[in-house]
Image (cartoon, rainbow, N blue to C red):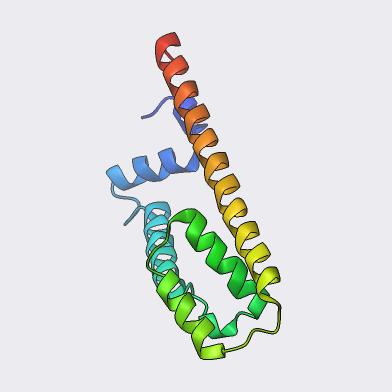
Length: 137
């Protein structure tokens, strides 16, 4: 029938052979993987709805000033009018305008540092891929 070396192979090989000769009705490992794949896909789709933007009204004045700076630093022109509208809605801030300006500058610097770090990582990754391609990895 089959040499004894084939019997020592993994359970998947044995199930495949059993299926081929009619002793097993399906590939149960494959079915399990497919079920897990669809379950994970479903959970990702459901949880994606949980990743919603935080409303601007939930930020305190310090956080709103910092957010404005980050938006300016990242160049996110879509949210800046919304932030300005939230400032107008609130009227007088609980912090001084000078403090708010400091938080805006801090937010801008934070955004610039994060973008430079991301650019540096991407550049380093591209260099590594180029070196690996040249070496033939």
